[in-house]
Image (tube, rainbow, N blue to C red):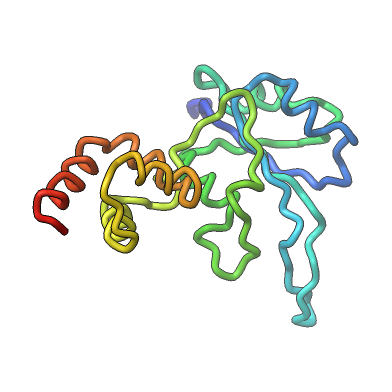
Length: 185
């Protein structure tokens, strides 16, 4: 007998036209961590080779406190959404990248601020964008940033996708900036 698939994180796709008018409020009302995005700029290729817009739809990811089976995840979604099935999310970062079409050069690109987060959902944005020390190093040198407070101000204002990485690597970044100052660079 095959094992029943369980996952903490599940997602679904649904056409906007099949959702109730208050669908976003209902999602937030679930009080489940998760996120969703409206894909309204996607295109598809018809049989004759012409590109036409896809119908606007949402991609939604919901996260449970412990692994659940698909039927339990489906039961958590309001019945008036008409969602027939859910899929397990094997990797939240990869799924989030898909929401943005980050790795899909032929598809419409979506921005991080188009993703709505629910009930405290978190994903490390630095991981989503593959931010590492090289990116921070380049920014510090390009802008000649000399202190950590100035760096954080720049990041919060202009590069919020770097904040998670720098916040989790404070000692490394500060040590680099201190060494720069000692060398007079």
